[in-house]
Length: 194
Image (cartoon, rainbow, N blue to C red; front, side, top):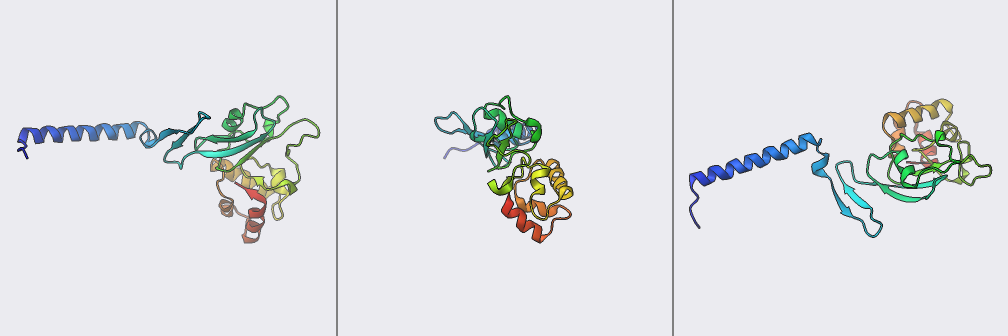
């Protein structure tokens, strides 16, 4: 093995330090997100899978008064507005003011865009809960009020908690809200989905 001179060791050390400084500057400039994310092609659909520090993509079901209802993959941190846009946008008869377009999406969430048309098959703000679990990401005070043990005051606290925390990823997070005890948590688990 050939001898390495002091000059060569010095050059190699200088290169290593320069690369380290460049890497640190890149992390600092991008908040760490740029260096920790990458995309992988996700098949024929042209979609992509983003793996980043926030846990990757979220998959949501967008239904109701949108042009292309379906299941969509969106980057973590996306909002309800992004999901509606990905589904082709709202139709003319959509009641967008009935949902929180600024709420963060949670993986597995269903986004229901209500319709103003009479007899629409889409659940609207006051719809009966027998149709299935209520989505915490789009629930209204009226919908939450249909759950046993939840009144309008607690329903409003749930919406405020959702907005303050950028969404709710688990029903179990609701135990942090005053007025929700163990018995209420059991009712919530059976009637709500993230």
